Length: 152
Image (cartoon, rainbow, N blue to C red; front, side):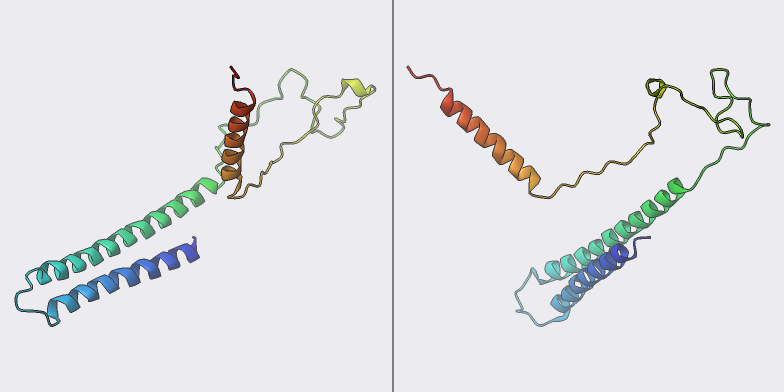
């Protein structure tokens, strides 16, 4: 579970909704002019906004917990039970591979195929790459328009 994210959102939404509700209560019960007709609307509006903020924060935290549980469930190993013994190897040449004494010897280097393994490739990008690309494309467009403009 992402504890820092949940704790941060709990504190943020909790303090915000508490401040709105307390502000609304202070507006309702505090001193004001006798002809201030919007005082009740403002007070109850702040209380309602505080309750909405608290409800949205609770919904958001619940969604984060649900998503983390869903990810944990997806990361678990799922093994399909077999109905019987393993099938024999396929007839196209995989009978000796992986068995004792099944070492494949190559006589010519040109006969080798494959031998690699899947690898994860990572690309690092920063936040400035997008704007730099846009500025570069705009500069390229302007230079192209200037250099290849018709001169008649």
